[in-house]
Image (cartoon, rainbow, N blue to C red):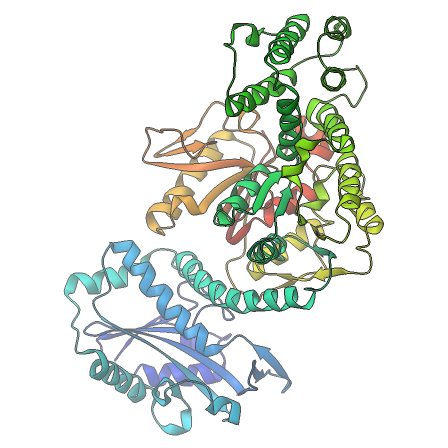
Length: 640
C-alpha cells in the first residue's frame, strides 16, 4: 500500500468526497509510492498541484485534480462550482506542468545535481467536456484521466511505464530517494511556490508582451499619448518598447525619468540603441547646462577666470577651494568632467554669504551669458532655494530659452517620460517649453497617481502638463498588475487602499508575512534565520532578494549592525565584503520603479518617524514598497 501524506487526509472533513475517492484509489499503489497532498506542504488549492506522487524506483508525477464539469473554450478553462455556476479557472495543464518543472528545479538547486529519475505530469478531470477547442490542444491522451476510464492507480503506474518507454528506464539510488523525500521535511510551500511562480509568470508575460505590442500598434499614428497605471502595470516596459521602435525607425529619442536606479536599468536594456539617450531629469539638466558652459568656455582665458570665480565662490561660502589647485583643463572631454565636478561642488553652497560681490568682480571679464548662469548657481536665501530642485532648474530654463547652438545635439525626434508622478512643477514648466519646440513630434508620458511619495499635494503637475500638451484626448488606463502575485497585490490594496483600479495577473502564490518587533535583538535573530532559509534552504539567489526601508541605512536599525550572521547588509552592489553572502539594502524611494522576486520591507515606526509621518509613514510610500515584490513579501515593522 502506498504511503499517504498527511495520513488523515481521508478523514479530514474539509476534503471533498471526490478527492477522498481519488486518494483511496491511489493508495492501491505498492509501498514504493509516496503520495503527497498539497495540504501536507502548506500549498494552496488554487496554486500548487493537488498531488505529488513519488515512486522510489522511478521518479515523480505532479497530478492536478479538477472537481466539477470542465471545458476549454479556446482561450480559457471553465469549471462548475458547487452552486453549479461556471467560473473561469487557471489552466490545469499548465499548473501541473509548472509544478513539475518547479519541483525538479528546486531539487537540482538544493542538491546541486540534476534529477536522475523520471518526471511527468497529469490531470484528473472528474467530468470533462471534450469540446472542439479541447481537441485542438496539444495534450497527449496519456496525460488526461477521467474516472470512468477505470482505476487511477493503474493509470498512474501506466504513465510511469509510458515515460520509461519514451526516456528509458531510470533507477534512483538510495541517497537520491532520501534527497527527494527530504524536500518535504522543510517548508516546501515557499520554494515550491517561488519556482512555480517564476515559470507561470514568465509564460503569462509572453502573452502580456504581445498585448503591449498590439497596444503600441493601436496608438502608432498618435503623437501625444499618456498612459496612467498603478505599480506593476508595465509602464516602463511600454516606454522602452516605444523607444526601441522609434530608434529602429532612425529617430533620436530622449527617455527621461526620476529614479537613478530605474535610469540605470533602462539604459542597460536599451544599450544597443545608440539613438536613445536615457537620463534622469537631473542628469538631463546637468548635461544641457554643462554643454552650454563648455561651448562658452572654448576661449582659454574665459576658462581660467571661470574656474577661478568658482573657487572664490566656494571660499566665500566656507567650502574647500577645490578648483584653485586644479591644473588647466584643455581637452573638451576633461573640461566636461571639470564642469560636472564644479556644478556638484556648488551644490554645497549655503545661504547667508555674500556671493554677489564675488561674481561682480568678473562681470567685465567673463561673457554675460556665463555671469547670468553664475548668479543662478548661488543661493538666494529663499525657502525653495535648493540647488538641484531650484537653481539648476533655473539654469536649465535659461539655456533652453536661449536657443543656443550647444542645444543642437540635444534635439530629439521623440520624448518619453516615465515616473511622471515624480516630476515637479518647475520640471513640467521646462518640459512644456520643450514640447512647444517639439511640435508634431512623439511625446509619451507614463505616470501613476498612487506613487506620489515625493509630493504632499495630490494634484500632479504632470497632469497639468498632459492637459496643456494635446495629450488629453489620448489617456490610456493600464489596469492589469503584471508584476505581483495575487496575494501581494491584495495585500497592497488592503494595507493602503491604493491601486484599487487594477487587476492581478492571476498568479497564486504565498501570502505576505507580517511581524512586529519591539526589540532590535529579536529583529536581528529573526532576520538571520529568515535569510538562512531563503538563501541556503530554499536556494533563492541573494541577487533576487532586497531589503527595503522607509529610512536610510544610517538612520535605520542597521545603522550600527550590518553583519547579520553570514550575511552583510550592503548599500552598494560593487564594494568588497568579507562575508559569505551580501543582501542589497535600498530605501523605498531609491528602489522606486524597480522590482525583486523577494522583498523584505523593514518599516520603522518609532517616535522619530511619527514626527514626520508624511515623509516616512505615508500610505503612498508603503504601497510603493509592497508593490516592488513579485513573489515573496515580508513586512517587518520595527518600533524601537
